[in-house]
Image (cartoon, rainbow, N blue to C red; front, side, top):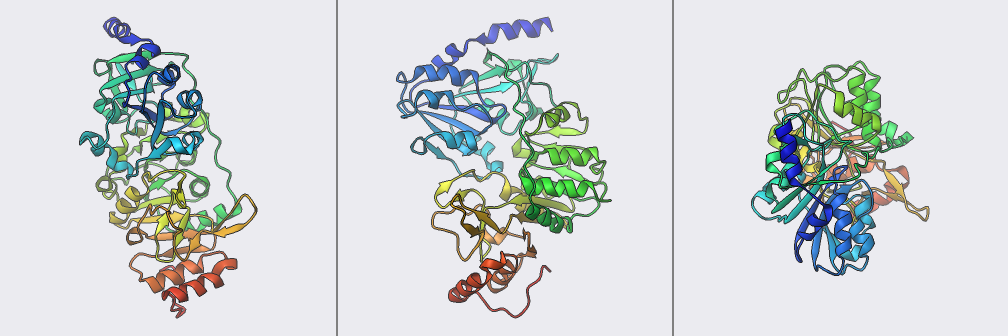
Length: 450
């Protein structure tokens, strides 16, 4: 351990020294989630006006707001390129931010091939363990990839972070790190569990109908996935497996209820596989202590060829809008991007390729605008500029509080009928009228979920 600490001390530099390495026109990767850069960010904010056209890359940063953009609201030195917007990224003035669309499983290859460049990367890690490894706690995701393909990699040491179990992508050895930065070690941010509405409960009840003993689950973030997990915990379902991008409080509760054994999984049997974790303080304790937890890169967790190996795979995700042909938007409001591509399509493809697998997209049938207007999420066509996160050719089940329908293998007439059947009743007549005008309505009472 003394040799490890000697090497450790030799690599420690100040955050100001790290910021001095950033040059005009560089791309600086802050990583994401609880691991996002804090120390370099604060120091780089002091260089406003000294550098030009520096692009900051960040994904779903949890806290605090960017120091560089607080210091440079006019964008004299800095702009933002995100792979997935979160609330902090959306605080950056719109004129100063852009984003790069691609499924999460693609990004490692984009870095490897040079399609994505990284000049300086800095992100939070645990102190070295007894073997000299720094852990990307609690979310490996793309951290190892970013470290590997950056020109300069700085590890920001956070004393409150801890070693995690999983693949080699969950950690990096001290010998592979060029510089270390020490700081005030802010604690991981605990997030509240999303509130579950009556509509969420009804959706979860429908989703529950496709989950069987031995199913392998991917459960996304949000109220509906939490409601699904809560309902499953109260059933007699057993021997469930988990292979997911995102580890939630709901999955933790399923484990605590004895529902998760992973005994039927083909890949990583007996393990709870995930690449990202954030939620309550209790969840972080679970990440540290659960012996069955196996954390890996998003390149692995989101690889459809890995996902498909698990029989009875059930993928459960949310959407913003869907049109009558089945095109799904899960990331924008018109041209206004609110999140990103993420891993939805990865799991939809992988789940449907699995033996007896299925992919479910869930949402309440309507949402309410700030002015109180209720709007249908099921639309004749997607609005101009809306993203197509999941193409209609890949959609399987769609679920609202009015039921669950199967679009796989259905023609456009059948899709229109089935989607209108789960729209809010207030909007069904108008949807039928518009479907007739589009030539996709031939109601022969064939509506059903079969």
